Image 1 (cartoon, rainbow, N blue to C red):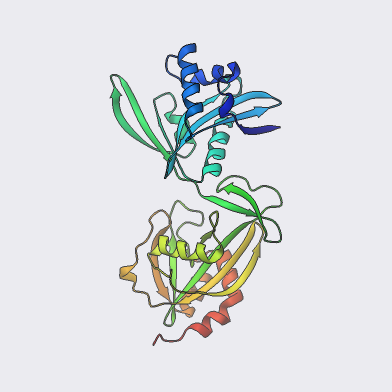
Image 2 (cartoon, helix red, strand yellow; image 1 turned 60 degrees about the vertical axis):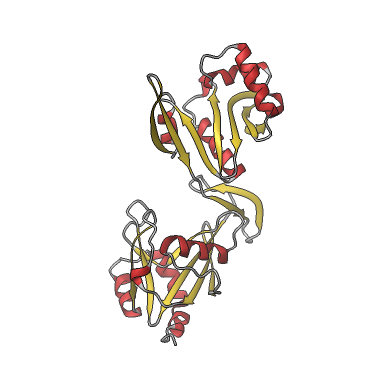
Length: 307
């Protein structure tokens, strides 16, 4: 069984120094010992070791800053490379700190960071003949819930396999502008590309569904309902978790929306008849339509001209 431990206080152990040298340029015993001691005395440093049956397999050393976590050293035992252990250590750092991950690296490691989902930018020849790269990754960290919707006090990195018998919390909102619904079109890089839906997403760590939907609506459309209270119409149980469905009456000017390109490629206002036709033509995400049908009468009752 593999476990990840915080080993900052024992960085000077020979086994750890031996692994650390894999990520240090021109390592010497003196250089490695000085580096380990410097890390040990720095209060912003954390050291994570990946162990299996008391054998050290991987090491990640990072520095926590106000807005990000800088990866200083990342090394995996040669006999266990290309088994996803480096990726696992990065995932653990992301969950522990819940901040953007940052690393500066060279030609030898830049492909690894790219495969792990980092956005890579070349810094050019920072030293004669040596090209350096800046790598950044912002993960979504989510709360885990049990089957009864109780927070477990554990976190999950979006995109990783969901642990057995755990759930996630999501939310969506239908914005009603006069007699019409606001729909957004999903970006090409997302699942269900080019299809239409109301605004929704998963609650991040520390959020409830109301905070989640206010954030999602602002991020994806620029609509600010931070001082308003949407109506909770439905609490829906889905296979991987829970979705709370809200509605709000709000006048929408499409020309003033600010769409988030990575999530949304278009927006429009439609009547209920137009929405039905879009569903019939397969233009609406099917699961979104399914939840909408459960609250359709409530939505229609809210469709009154704004005063």
